[in-house]
Image (tube, rainbow, N blue to C red; front, side, top):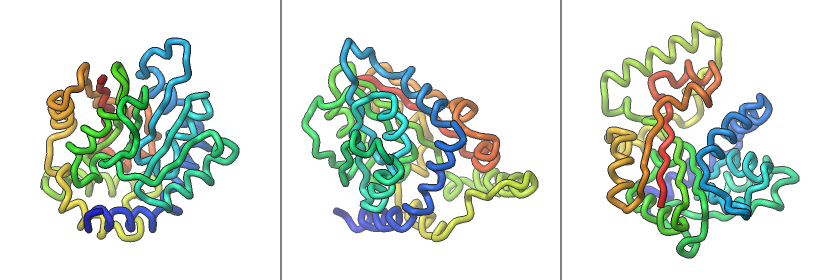
Length: 252
């Protein structure tokens, strides 16, 4: 494991307990149905069998929980042991139905053509080698399998003055609305320092992702840049107005 990857792992392990509150809030507020519906409508046809789903970068387990509760055969991986522990705890009675593994998203230990679906959220921006990761994800998908990646240009403001101004405006709007500022958390400075060394903040996304996926052999690649309006609460929309999420769908 590289020094950078190790630093990222340690950072997310320290944040695991606080980050899990986001998942608990999503589950408690009923947003799990909106997220599950959006994912499932993009799944391939089941063909009379239970789809095998790989949740990469499961974090506190949100995707794994909402999909296992709907009957899918779910495997969940994360680089951080702390996140895996949180995911198991959050899954409760479902934990026994989900296979959890500590694993690097860029070096999966699964055989070729193992899964029908790959789902991931807020992960690719955080990878030292996203091209390698996308190649690995394609490798473990079956022919006709679907990859669904929801992400955002979270740290583009470090490299773009206009984005920085927009981010500052987000902070003011959140304060005026009386919402919690999601940008205020321990060691936020450290994640900024890490992000300055990562490639994704400097890239035009999701355009870069689409081109890269096609180059790697994926087909039917599409990007929905309006998905935030369906999946985020008003509090999230205000917090992240300058960094709306996008849904990338690609077929092997």
